[in-house]
Image (cartoon, rainbow, N blue to C red; front, side, top):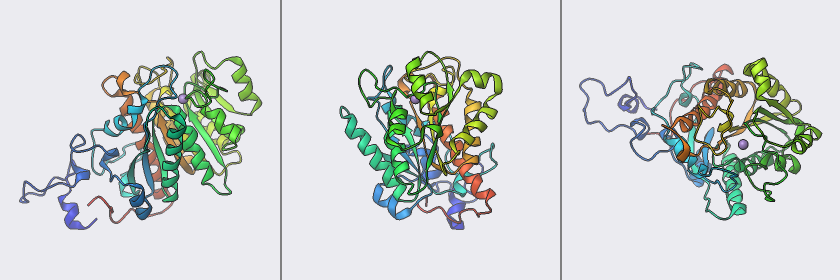
Length: 356
Ligand SMILES: [Mn+2]
């Protein structure tokens, strides 16, 4: 960014210099988080054509679809709630990773997949195409759900883009989401992981789950999971071994063969006290700090091919607790991607195209 423009940028500690025009217009990116239309972190909102031209490092994609929901609906409103659930704008600074992620990564908001209601096949198709457009631009897609069924088109698009390389998936969730059907339907938020394994997008043995608990699925589904080699780490294991040791095993299992990892975060892996705004809350889950640390642990250890954060249902939320946690799941991943660049000896970006 040119010095002249940087001087006019209004970060929290860098307001217009003394003597400058007090009515200086701030860059959109630097206006307060609640001012203006909410793209993710007020980052540039790009359509697919602009995306292809700019070729960013990471693109946020909204998947506002919740007709796969088995219980409380409303995750279609999740993407915009996650975008809006922040009080920071401008060049944010991760205290966890000691890095300003947007100084290292070109991150944009690619908007939402053009979903319409009442047509699940079409919804999944347009989500898959949107993620494919992001991948074609060279960016890593980070998908904001939406119910967990959106992982089926999103992770399928990532797998299809890998060429000869293979995919592992690390899946944080209270639920296995490996049902054969949900009341006879193949496309629900209870079935996407079985569809991904059946299609060959990911091998069962490289599909690794963390945080399972509660009263579902039934024994026959667990038997299918075992027969297909899934590695599932229940909450009871985290209670005895701690999250960090379990996540270290999950990373090794996902990378046992594959080259890259897709990270799927169902916000209901958190305890409902820390994430009430979700469709199927299950008591006894992770703390927010455990999940945010786990995301840093995963992203620092793998080559991230794609990610989603799903099942935020704002109507059931309280004081934006759940949406804020989901926003920070994304921010932890972005900060970790930036830290990997720093650790690899790359240099920060000289300018921020699109932000001026
Ligand atoms: Mn789920």
